[in-house]
Length: 161
Image 1 (cartoon, rainbow, N blue to C red):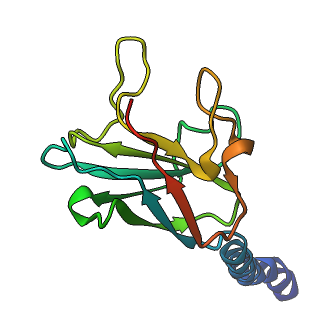
Image 2 (image 1 turned 30 degrees about the vertical axis):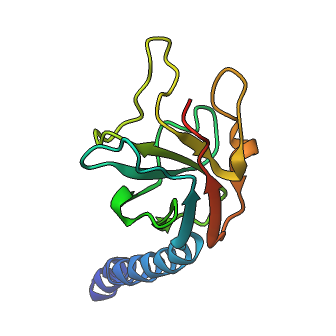
């Protein structure tokens, strides 16, 4: 009878050890696969003329797929007061180790969103990574895509219409 109890108890002793070892392995693999990266985004063409209090430049990073501009994986901002000669730098942290596309806009009135006219067209300066441009809408992710591990990228804001 003692042998039976020992044999029955052995899986219960080994199971927590195996689970702990497996959890450690998963954490190590997950940490290496999801390495977070940083990127400096230099935005030129920034204007402070007519900018209100709280005016800022906002940058968002997105991963690919249908509707790629819906859920950012990283965001950053810089006050227009920090712009020097029309250039401001925004640092994005915690980017996934994946291809990303960037969206940038100059929030001139400081309300935290890209303002649009009655037709739905943006009225504040905006741009995308790789200076991608769309036809009757935003560019595709492939047009704006930056390779994984890109540490620095420059974007030029166009003159406001």
